[in-house]
Image 1 (cartoon, rainbow, N blue to C red):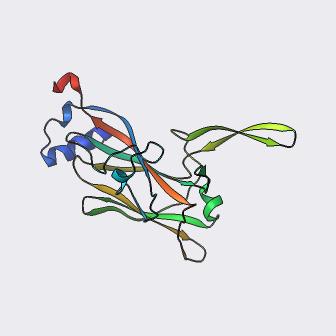
Image 2: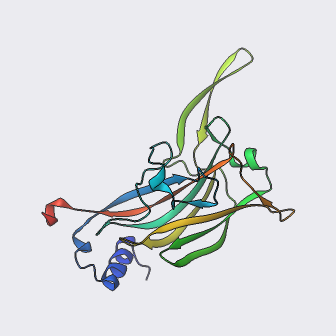
Image 3: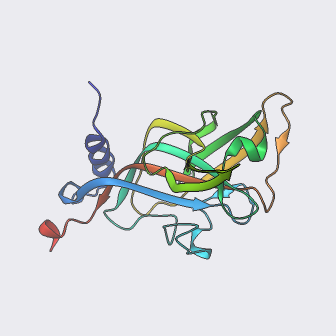
Length: 202
């Protein structure tokens, strides 16, 4: 029998001795960050660039009784104007992201390739973009998630640092593609997030 997201969170919490986590409120949550330093690492430097256009976290660890069960991982790219752009249009149709998810001192996902592009639509749009083509004004929809993987099911527990290591490869030649200042990579982690439930904790 498959464990639910809540069961996984409570199981890990009990192993860590966090007995009050079951009294917390669970909801959908997401964290995101951008590798502004072109270091090949995302989330590790979030505290140095606290800006909603870049990240929604102040550090890469959760507080006591706060956790995230990662169910979806999405990468996205920025062009030279700072706009979210199609990953393949920046890096080429033969490009793929290979990433590791590190929680604490353990790599819980290693050398994981992500190929799919253009989905999902949840948390995905940057609004309708108006473009003039000839005499016509067209509205186009730009998805935020350019590279996406779902079904991870990995728990990031409270007070443990995490980050994502990533590399971009050309899958035909095998060469490493190094992002530039005009090709920045960002990452979203989606899932079930546990937050303080003030009805039961105060």
